[in-house]
Image 1 (tube, helix red, strand yellow):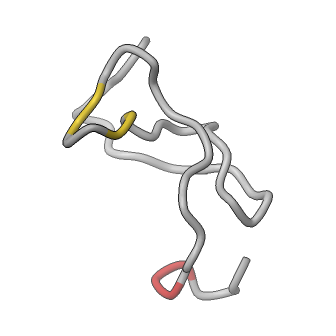
Image 2 (tube, helix red, strand yellow; image 1 turned 90 degrees about the horizontal axis):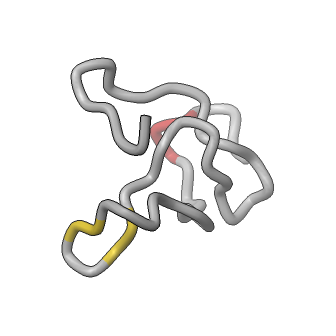
Image 3 (cartoon, rainbow, N blue to C red; image 1 turned 180 degrees about the vertical axis):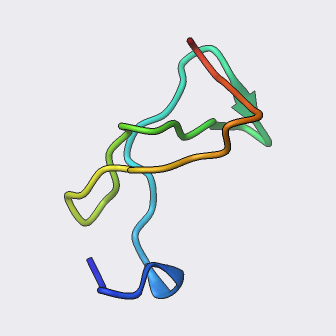
Length: 50
């Protein structure tokens, strides 16, 4: 993954099986990214599959 997160070209490889937006699963902290990394941070005001 690039060292500057704002330029990340990866896409999420996993997401919530219970929450879908525009036909796609909602990505959560800990979900995988196509580059092999994982999502490290998220929005604290929104929780999914807690």
